Image (cartoon, rainbow, N blue to C red; front, side, top):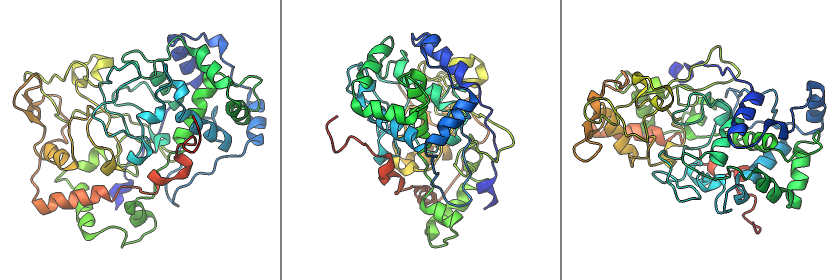
Length: 406
């Protein structure tokens, strides 16, 4: 079981204030319009007035690192939950954050790729949302987005492609929210120290707080590990566990640690890693190239070795989050195992034809393996033991508008 706890990474957080100001400027809002962060003394007094958030996780589960300038409170999480499910945050009020992140699917959407309010499809699959408080990076291919507070600006105001498409409509956004008595009460409760809490900074802080509250730590495998309940998973899943953490499959190298990813951070970390990997999914023309709209980390760095490198997502709740890979191009867990068993995907015809196993930039851990049909079934049984059914049924994470008119 030592491998399960083997990864130890730390998050070196950049300044929230400067990042929000930078991206807010790109979104069309002058930093001077945002309410400045309160002084440490004022912040401490305000936090004391708000009820602190209580984490729900098993004993021994790591505690997340929370930004000092955005402490968790019940009121802030509650406000963020309402905003997450509110379609007023999109251009035509037809989509909310939850439109692409469904609780029943561990906050993924079951689609190959999502479509924004303007009808333009996103090139990448909607990532599942859970245990985000532990993520040192937050998207498939951007190593610079390290804070939930700033990441939220992309779906709100990003233009390539547009998702919620609110660029230039910040005043309209807050007009919509101010008009709701519900939000008059909830913004003030979440930020009692602010004369006017209806600012982009406070909105993103509340959304980030709700997203950090999405803790998934009650799968059958968690009960097996943390509660030491030997009967929590099947014999097949135990055999699959041994395969997963073996040098035969090499799975644990990119999906190890308590969160089943090599990209995790918590209060006990000593250092941070932000790894990205090429899994041999494509090899256009035999040159190592990936489709032009999905080149991975290369899109930002333009370094040849970064072609096709993406962040390894957590495998928690993996049973619920099909289709798989950054572009949703693999339909089932069985197909995912076949992909890795082959050491990369072969596409025999069409514009993406190529032998992924010979991609020159492919990770050394993707080297292929042979499993019997029983071993494949065991590995899938183990992966399914990572499903947290209580997480997808948790009323604290559900749509607060479900029983009322939106």
